[in-house]
Figure 1 (cartoon, rainbow, N blue to C red):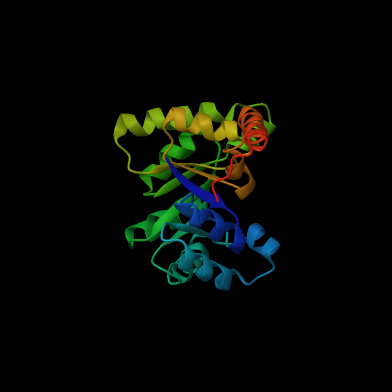
Figure 2 (figure 1 turned 45 degrees about the vertical axis):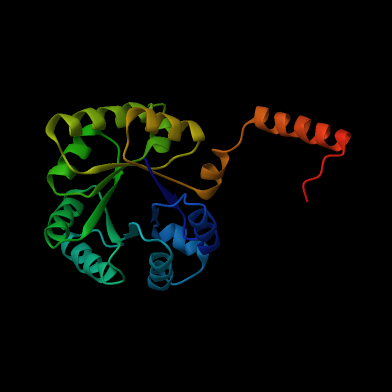
Length: 217
């Protein structure tokens, strides 16, 4: 499973990329606003750090303007994935941009039917938002399972990019189901290495080493 990091913070991207934990990056205007930088400038810098897809989101809501913005964003670097919303206008933009050879990430997916039509429109990635479904008492992972079954039934090439990840359990379940990609904030990705028994074991190990006076360097 591929790991995308959901941030526009350059230092976080570099640190995780150096560990081999970054297969791509997802951004949006809200994340870039938090970084306090120009959207085109920060997107270009991210594309220079990461070799995999970097999702850059349009801000228009009608198809023609989304297509124009998508073409401009795609010129930033070869690894740009233009992110469009899952509306009819977004699907129109997806079809045009994907037919032109661009990667397209269709975002704000909340149903299997939406995922189905996004695949038919040529989406490179579909981004179901599991955390936001959980917020309204709907199990977001059920949606990932449904999309996996539908895409496998018909051989769609669209990759399932699990988004709105809040916990490490979302990542575990995504891997169990067979999602292609997850995108998560840096803090959630770092928590994948955490376990209290690891901490307890290391503390006991260090205490034994200190007691025995063992040194290697």
